[in-house]
Every structure is written in structure tokens, then in C-alpha cells.
Image (cartoon, rainbow, N blue to C red; front, side, top):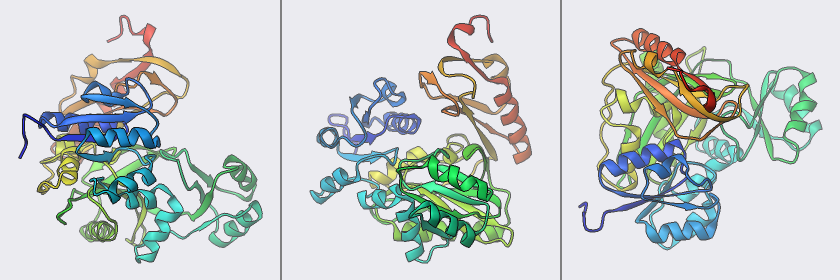
Length: 391
């Protein structure tokens, strides 16, 4: 029952674009939303009923958020899993489960957990010293990927070691941080799938999509993935197996590699809505954001259907600009049929920062891709003062 006298209140740790889009769906259904984020005026604050300005790990602030809300979820892995565990021990609903967050927050812990449950992942090992890194590069072969195990996202915690000459520089790049080396997978495609589960045990998955990364940051998502039926079924089976061993409710973004032999390995898991699921707003019978809310509130999950092919392209901050920005080219972009623009509302552009995205639908993947590229090419980000006169 949804009472208009006392609407259910959802607390979200993190107020970026993902929190904003979760909040938008929640408000559509008249749920209340309170977000916790260290940046005053964060994107989600423009839609949420209230913002608590505090660090994601601030235990006192998390407890304050819990007092005001009926259920807590998060849109960022930087949340304080220890504080959330304390709430869960008092039978307070935190979804996904704090233990799942703790496992996923550390990439070595995450891969070890998956390996323990016989879920296919690339070979990996913690690095103990620079000398050990040399030994591991010899063992795994080059190229290999050096990763920070914690507090890294959007490629900022990755360093691809291509030659022996890169080893010292890679080790120094992460100096003072826990790191792991991962065997480089010669993949033919990178794919992902959004899978949701509610506390009652219902599991539903979205279509498998294809992802194209540039500089380790997602650039383009193509729905559906251009893969064989056999590979598609392998990906779905692997994703559902992963959901069976992870605890808690919510939606998960599961990224995978497809090898030349048609094998599927898990790359990384996000215990939240995900960039590669943005296309669901336009192209699916239910969005990833609504499905996540259904899951954390233990409502029946929808069975997602792909209504049309779609392509999502991210809008990133230019490499040569850091500051307050404006979006130019709206007239040309909005003339592209089937294209939708999302601007997240972040006030400052930084190199490679995610500032928005475009999703285009079409009768075929080819048409959707052409529309998405045309719409994206029409958009430019410029210093705010230069916007006057720009269309």
C-alpha cells in the first residue's frame, strides 16, 4: 500500500546522476526521497525532497538518513558498509545487503568471492612488491592490467602494462595503495546485463548489451548485443548464477568479457543501477531505475522486454577544459528522430567526467547507432561565457 498520508521514504547514499534518475522514478510514484552526498546541490538534490550534506562514509550522517527513511539503498560503492551492517543487524532494510557491498568494494575480494563460487573470472593476484609485480607479469604475460583494489571507477584505477618498461611506472602510479594484477583477456566483445532480485527471491534480467570503452570509460552501449544466441544464453546464465551467490535485493550491473572461443568471464560487478543500463529508459518496458525501486521495496519485479533497438553514448567532459560549462548544439541535436538528451546537472566540467548521455532508438541497431552518433556529434560543451549565440 502506498499511503499519501505517510508516503514511503527511500534514502539514497550518493546524489549523482544515478541517484537523480532513481529519485525521478521514485517521485513519479509519489515516494519521498532523501539523498546523502558531500556536494551541496548535487544532481539528485534537484529532485529529492531533502539532501543531507555529508561524506558517503560519515556514520553519523548515515544513521540520520536511516532515521528519516524507510529503506536505504546506494548509487555508489563508496558507501560505509560497516555502518550499513550495523543498521541491518537492527533489522533495518538496507538493499543491496551491506555484506554484498563490502565484497564488491574491494576488487580482489570480489574476484576471490566469485572464484570461490566457481564463477569464471580472469586470472588475478594481489601484488606484494615491485619485484613481485615483475614476477606476476612474467607469469600472466603482457599486456596485463594493474588495478587498485578500492576506491576506483571509470578506469581511474586501472593501468595497462604493455611492456616491461611500464612496470616501474605502473607500480609508482599506485604507490601506497593495495593493487592486484589481472591477466589481460583477449576479448572480442565487452557485454553487460542488468539483473534485479527482490527480498522475496524473484529474479529478472534485462537484455544483454554490448559496451564499447574508450580509455577504460564506457563510451557506447548497444542494445541488444550483437552476439550469438549461444553466447547470450551463457551470459544470462552466468549473471543469474552470480545473483544466486550474492546476498541482498536490488539491481546489479554485471560486466563481462566474451572471448574468441565464445567463453564468457565476469569483469566487474556493480551493486546498483549502471551506466550501461541507461538505454532502458527509452527502449525497455521498464527502466532499470524503476526495477531497482521495485526490488528494494520488495514489490513484484517487471519482466523487462526490449521494445526497440537502442544505442546510448556518453557525454564526457573535454580533455582541454575544466570549469563551468554550457551545452551548445541543442537545435541540431533535437532534430534527430528517436534521440533523447540527458544532462546530469553537474556544475563543473572536468576531463572525462560523465556530464550526460544521449540515447537513440531505431528500427534496427544500425539506425539507432547512426541516430545516436549524429545527435552526439551535434552536442558540444563550451565554457559558460561562450554559450551566448550558440545553438
